[in-house]
View 1 (tube, rainbow, N blue to C red):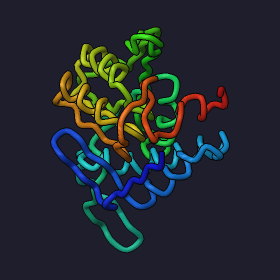
View 2: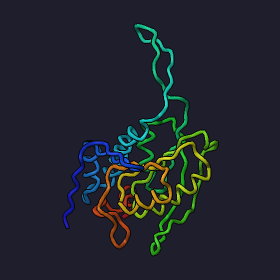
View 3: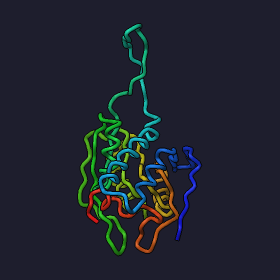
View 4: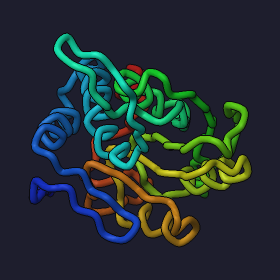
Amino acid sequence: MTSTLTPDLTVSATGGLTVITHPLVQHKLTIMRKKTTSTAKFRRLAGEIAMLLAYEVTRDMEVVLETIETPLATMQAPVLKGNGIVLISILRAGNGILDGMLRLIPSALVGHIGLYREPKTHVAIEYYFKMPPNMPLHDAIVVDPMLATGHSAVAALDRIKEKKPRSLKYVCLLASPEGIAFVQEHHPDVQIYTAAVDQGLNEKAYIIPGLGDAGDRMFGTL
């Protein structure tokens, strides 16, 4: 079956979903989708797309004015207000997105949550959870390449909300309509950011047309 995606090359925001269809994002995502793309290139492209997504996800970050001296004059210039971002990676594949975002936001704190999907029920099972202190003072951005069934995303968001972050967003490369609906049902307050919404899930709960198992392709464990 041949699948064709036709993005409108804009940032499209509807309800709790923002689809970032910038041409550079879509071009790099297309290369990631190809089954012939090497592990090294796949990993590099994931980081590059993550940086581009971070640009849009952080659009509402607060700034304050600071007095600075340029070579020619004194001026009031905008700087980010404090260090209020926590990037949270859903292990293991989330680390491929995390690294790219950290290149753009190097001052961000980092949290990790380890989840694996039970093969038959697709229920997410937690095996690791570590967050920075003082989460109520921070805006949390959860990163994971694929939003498939939504079970892992919801499990992660459930746990992170226990730490009461100031705000919470979810970022992925690809999403299925089923996964989006599941997250929005359980966490309607969480804005989802993605580069593409694909057709749906197959019988093994993989996104179609998708790009395969993001973790395996990122780390060469096919």
